[in-house]
Image (cartoon, rainbow, N blue to C red; front, side):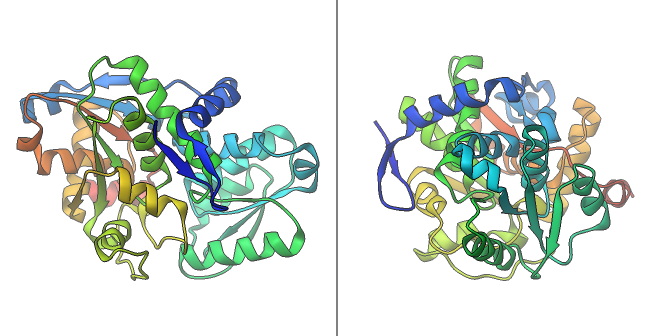
Length: 328
């Protein structure tokens, strides 16, 4: 049985926590489809399945971890209010669940956050505060404020309950596909791949887990290569959902180091082309982070011949401006 540690060093049973999360959040989320891709299967001479988290509530997998964490809080903690930091999908998930449960929530965002994202979050009635020009700086500040105010901090990825929530995708995959050989997962802070990999490898250690990152922001890949979490400036990337640094001492670093079998890094053009391919062949909009798994599969398709391959399609939030840019 694979175990992992909390930030305090206490060992936890990964499968047990994932199953607890599944029971806790089931009535709040969608069981997303696992769709067979005829186009990608033909391209790679294999069987490719898309796990469509872009069809999840708030159009991203992030709601799984956010709901699991908020629901695991004590009553008095919920009554005091909660704080998080995010410029994207985690913020939307946080705003959704706090609004639904009537909990006062505050989201700290980087100062560069677009007006469209600000408006979307404000629609939930959530309080927004702006600080920093990098997601790590924003996270550090938000955590500091949470401590000062005595409020729970809901991390986008660096929390066992967040990771356990994302692991519920692994539970669904094992129920939806009898034989899984390889799973390709987008990687930013590492919460999604930690949850999926930790759960799946607990059930079947032979399942290969591939981390997918943009060349312009491959912080987790570079950190694992360096043997420690590094500070690395990210270049502009259409995969904004995985961009930016990793919080110091994040529990996800050790999970990724232990469970990820390999990484595939892709260019901006490869990501954009994959967004277009999914629009053309599956008639769906996906965001840049979600396209990482598609472009990674196509880049290394010969390595997957004859296997059952799952691509995690992590989210759908992409602006009209980005779509216009891609289609031109």
